Picture 1 (spheres, rainbow, N blue to C red):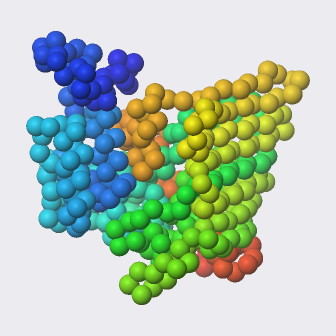
Picture 2 (cartoon, rainbow, N blue to C red):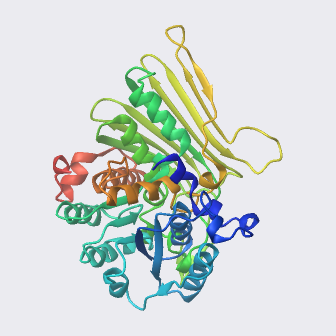
Length: 407
């Protein structure tokens, strides 16, 4: 994408202060004519953001949606109208119709976690490029089935692990993996402190049997980052965690919530790198922190939203190299209209990568194999909490009849 095309996003073209311009006088502010049409399957909070981000990026139009909840469909129509007031969003009456409409050339799946396997099976029959939200599945068997499905799939099959596009992680990867500012990576630490899970239709995210558990549903993003920075496969996982504060008194259809709201996850990799993750989901802010230590330096990065009036950087990154080379402190960021995406599912550069991939360009978007390994750590972590012991990854996969060496 050229710089001119970057600025030709619908974020600028639809700003009300430019509405006085005749179409004939729009050049830089002329909305780029979309070259692709996507359907969004599942338009809850994540699907709604995928609609907004697709329209914002500009190279794809959202043709239609499918969701059994009428309120979700009506909200999707309103969100779409903000970008294309004259357009009409198609509302399909079946999953099959939405997947197989010849008018579209891409599918975005943002349905509840436990439905991914069944929706993916139908979507894959279309042969269209697929962007499947994270986590790709809630069980090892389903995750493996999707990897096998993707192996023989002729079109792009991307997994929605979009944290790798956050500016702090983009710059951290540049420092640790490209510049090798830290030397050989030895340890990785990620911390997330945040508010509890929000409400969902049918409250599926409050129950492990539907979400896969907190360490699969929410934390697969961070385990993808572990794998990304470690450049290796996980060998073992040991986790402690509990349901300390959230949803003790919550029940739905007579069933009590069982999701973890805090955990410490320790991962040992095949190449010897060690990683640990600290989760708290009853904190009065949204805070992420990454610390990577190598044999030649240390990197620390954070992203913070604490809702206070005190002005301090929303993002921060430092690379400390001692006396051997210069150290750096920076505040990685994107333009605000880009940074405002990604909080509820889809991010600007994730969608840019999806379209680039469809057009045959090389990207660093998460593959189905990478999606699989992010889920593997989450499932192992949930098992470790229940067992109170270390989970050996090879043994866990073998019990499920899966050869990890083939993925």
